[in-house]
Length: 200
Image 1 (cartoon, rainbow, N blue to C red):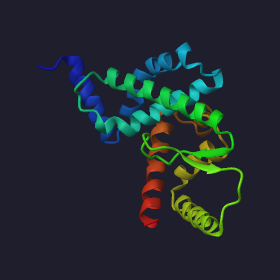
Image 2 (spheres, rainbow, N blue to C red):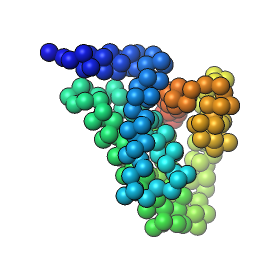
Image 3 (cartoon, one colour):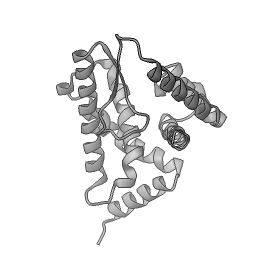
């Protein structure tokens, strides 16, 4: 027999998975303080400017992973696990970057977090085949971006081209920060699916 709290939690998750933006806002509002608390643990040694980025990355991971939540534990436990894993991944990326300063690390767009990062050496020039493949991928990515609706284009531009944090994007677009996280995630999924389809 489910308690009232468990029933409400299930209903909230189901609404989120059905694309209810207000439900996503509510879920983020409920769990953001706990996420922030974990990210600020001193053992991670995150710089002040890194904390907000890790929090936002955690929220994106929750959006991406919520469909895998099977109610075998409390939602708070699920969120805690994702938060810790995101912090660990951030530490790994920082460590790898320091260890291999001559490489540029590119995380796969919305890919499996367990996949190793793609690493491009910064030293030797690429051969002709690599250059052609890179040009082809850039062209494909441009087509994917061009096919987006204006809202997605604005979100991608502000986040990845102007490098704005989500709270500044929210002020610029007059929208809630958590809503923008959900919307951007959907936009990235569209790009990924089109990239994978056309790249076959």
